[in-house]
Image (cartoon, rainbow, N blue to C red):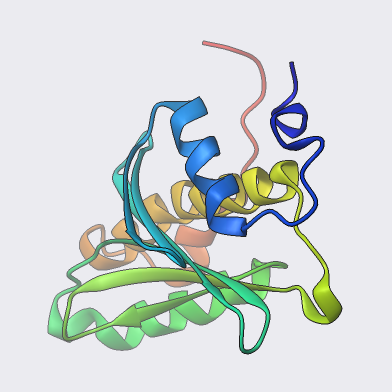
Length: 167
């Protein structure tokens, strides 16, 4: 049964209700923070990612924020920010930013659903998957710049290399 089938027959489905169903389906830990907000933990290969989705009815936007800890040494910040720019040039959906005070890397995306549009459950699942996949893809490159003394250009080669075959 597809995830969409859970919502057939319903006219107006709240996007956070769909996210909650997805979290249950994937067995992710989650907390329904408010009617319009949910927070969850999604396990990746490199990190556990904290993901928050919030619905804003005023601007009809479903906002996703995916965070993970990142603590670059102060002397590496110029190269780190150069790396951040290269990464964002490679992201077609969403973007990364760094919250220095909290020591968090943040992937953000806003899905605008103006005019009463509704996101489908598959669309929301793809949105969450894209956030985790982007974070997983670029995490090693950020670490190489921060701790491996590699240039941003060298580190990006790790992020853009495609793995072939199976282990």
